Image 1 (cartoon, helix red, strand yellow):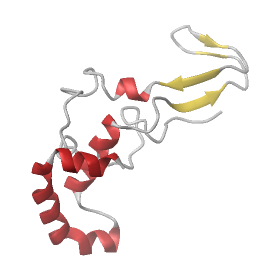
Image 2 (cartoon, helix red, strand yellow; image 1 turned 30 degrees about the vertical axis):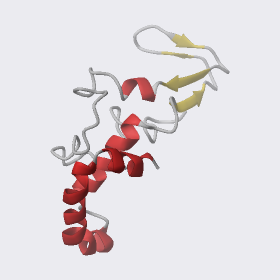
Image 3 (cartoon, rainbow, N blue to C red; image 1 turned 135 degrees about the horizontal axis):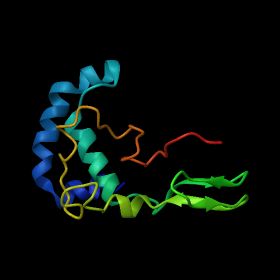
Image 4 (tube, helix red, strand yellow; image 1 turned 30 degrees about the horizontal axis):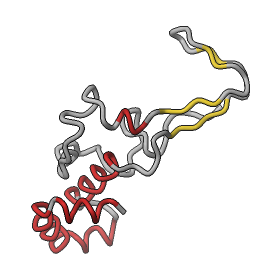
Length: 127
C-alpha cells in the first residue's frame, strides 16, 4: 500500500497517528469508529496514489441522454476520471500536495464514504 510509503516520506505524521492509535484503538475495535487521523492519512494516500485512473465503469444497456444534452448509445462504456478529479483544484485545495490530515475537519469524510466528491467506490444507481 502507498500509505506505508507515504508514512516513510512524511514522518511528521507518525507521532500523532501513533498517539491516536494508543488512545483510541480499543474504541475502534469495539465499534469501528474513531481514528480520524489514521483514516484521513490513508484516504489522502489513496487520493494521490489510487490504483486506477478511472472508476464507475458503466455499460449503457439502453440509449441514455443526460439532462444537459450529451447522449450515450446502447453498448457504450462510460467511466469517471477519478485520478484527474483527485488532482483537480476545483475539488481539493493544493491538490498535488500531500496533506495527511486534509480530511480531519470534515466529520462526514471517511475513507469508506460514497459520494460525488469521493469516487473510489463508485456512486449513483446502476440501471
